[in-house]
Amino acid sequence: MGDVRTARWREAGGSTRLSAGGVELESYTVGPPPDRAPTLVLLHEGLGCVALWRDFPRSLAEATGCGVLAFSRAGYGASDPCSLPRPLDYMTREAVSVLPEVLDGIGFREGLLIGHSDGASIAAIHCGEVRDPRVRGLVLMAPHFFTEEIGLAAIAKARTAYAEGDLGDRLAKYHVNVDAAFQGWNDAWLDPGFKAWDIRNCLDPICVPVLCLQGEGDQYGTEAQVRVVAERVPARVDIRMIADCRHAPHLEAPDITLDEITEFIARLRAGGALTAGATNVRRIQN
Image 1 (cartoon, rainbow, N blue to C red):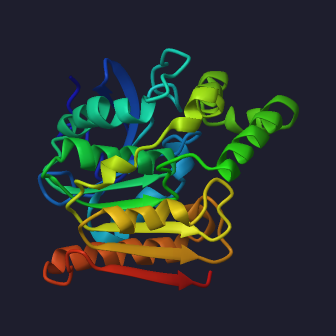
Image 2 (tube, rainbow, N blue to C red):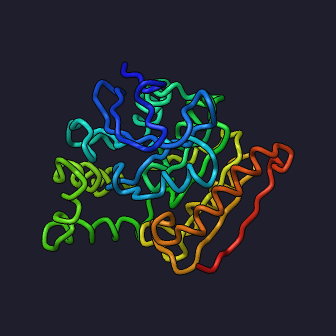
């Protein structure tokens, strides 16, 4: 397995490669390496990759003093390709088989998983099923735990935009194999068998604090997707609903998102400020 622990961790910010799941993955690191500070691991959405985080990794590192790793899953960005069609449990496979290798490959010692959309679901599955004690908290941005008609309709609309509009051209700037990146995500979600997809059970064993961020105008899911976190996670859960924001809080409300994550990490560091079982729901004007 590849090792970016020291020689390949780019503290000033830079690209590297790591091995996980039998393939090579593109990655980006910034901030202190895992042997000097906690690490924030970013898990991208269903059409995301390293580049689509834009300047968010650097902003996180500067605001928190933590190291940050972003990587593209197989089939995305400049990572090695993956086999298609994706299995309908692809998020669970990423969470329990691939992500542990990524964490070990960077010498992960302690830190947080910060996931967006599919990446948030992967982070929650990992925390609930793998229960790695090095993971001290979760930040879930626009997570999915079960299918909703609103989300499936938006995904169907994306298929039309890809086939008939300029979505493919826009995504091609970021993905080496844009057809595989799009179809791997879109075909899985629109498979008739995916309507029964439900990972709510992964929330029950999560014993670390969780911060949920969701736009009030999220076209891919309703507030029920974050409410279920508060209902089932026995640890502290903070929910922040952001006005004038859709599916990507880190891009559409970057200042609010960065402030909320920074404060969440500060509370984790303070230790006693987190009370097990409490839930704090707040609505924020963007």
